[in-house]
Amino acid sequence: MTNTPVPRILVAGAGPAGFAAALAAARLGVRVVLVEPHPVLGGMGTAALVNNFCNAYNDWTRFIIGGIFAEVRAALIRRGALYETRCMEPYEPVAYDRLLGDLLDGAGVERLHGRRITAAAADGAGLRVTLDDGMVLAVDGAVDASGDATVCRLAGVPARLGRDGDGAVMPLTMCYRIAGIDLDAAKAGWPNSVDGRNGEQRPVYIDPNTGERNFFHSGHSPFIDPMIVADRSAGLLAIPRDHIAVIQGVPGCPGEATVNYGRVFLKDPTDPAQLAAATAEAEAQVHDGIAFFRRRLPGFADIRLVGMARQIGIRQSWQIEGLHRLTADECLALTQFPDAIAQCCYMIDIHEPGSDKTTCKVLPKGTHFDIPWRSLVPARGPERLVAAGRCISSDAGAMASFRVQPSAMAIGEAAGVGVALAALRGIGVRDLPAAAVQDRLRATGGILE
Ligand SMILES: Cc1cc2nc3c(=O)[nH]c(=O)nc-3n(C[C@H](O)[C@H](O)[C@H](O)COP(=O)(O)OP(=O)(O)OC[C@H]3O[C@@H](n4cnc5c(N)ncnc54)[C@H](O)[C@@H]3O)c2cc1C
Image 1: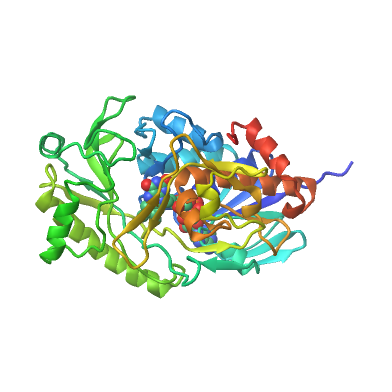
Image 2: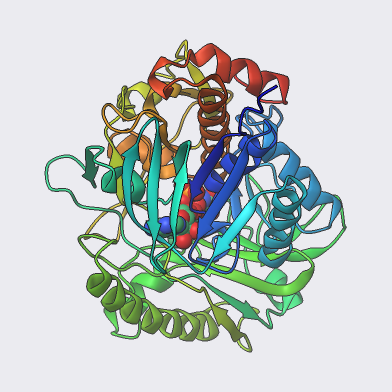
């Protein structure tokens, strides 16, 4: 009797997409090796301190993203580490990293932290990749969840940077964590500034599960925006942004919050020199923002900086050219695809390159669009390689919607399933019927309709 070797799958990047890809593949019985430069899991969701899940409900009651995302979200609620707002849901990033580690370790995923992939080429039906410490891995298939389509580009898959026309990418932001918000002073001095998106009462939020009280503000505000205009005109504030994206309380830590406010422009986030210059500028904006908050916001007079993110937050980078290029028009037309592997209901949220403005196109309440399997599959290149998360095939407008973490995680789960199934069947991903991926997703809690 001969033993058929168990296929080995590589996942590049441990953001929401890579984490879910690794877990989904491992649960299908293949061996999985996950490569991640940061010591933490979660990608932008931890390393860039974007500790928030945007919109897994399309009408604040109907969940449109299930599977691994729903499992993670429920576990965070059980651990008291997620505020259940049913819209933008803040979570505690350290607890989130630990949870992702528990799940991956429990499924037997081999994790290689502190390293990145620097070379990749087709090797038979699989790939041969090289890490920056010289390690070489021969694998039977791979998921590129690097956010930059790095593995795909190294392996010869065509890719594009930024929006059509000028290749511009959305600005970058250094997020940070503050402590010392006086919640009573905030409640007394800050009007309930409803931002029009979800009608939540602001700014002091009470979590229905834990009863914990904390601060939450997001979006344009008739209270804050005029202060920003005044302070920018007076030369007191230099951040090129007309509103604060979010100040969100950290679950389990009343009076602490993470902040998404800065805005830095560059041409290519994969260029180390540009990224270093952007990071320096973004760090200066952190102090600028804190000074503004102390000066202007009720309850913020005594806040202190707890820490900045490990890396500047990157919204947009290289994306593959796949079998289908998802467009903003398709998203706004609420397109349902026969090969749907995930759903998304988040608005098209474009932080405009070179501008202090943000363009939002909201989907009607209770609706969603589909993400097709073909957008994960490269048009050309190695037989068993797919992209996942924000680097799949789309135009800039579509990406400005599905880039959010719940969708990225759902796309990653499908990518892990697809590559694992292709490897187990001994075929390429372009020959794998999308129905096989859909069947597995539905059988494991995925929501596709
Ligand atoms: C400032 C900011 C605010 C945001 N706000 C929200 C929000 O409120 N809610 C929300 O849901 N989403 C938000 N997002 C979007 C969301 O965080 C990302 O789009 C999402 O994390 C994308 O997931 P991903 O797994 O595709 O990529 P990422 O999270 O970027 O993960 C990619 C991973 O790949 C790793 N990597 C990179 N290169 C290599 C390599 N060569 N080899 C191996 N690994 C590599 C990286 O270290 C990283 O861990 C925000 C994003 C930013 C930047």
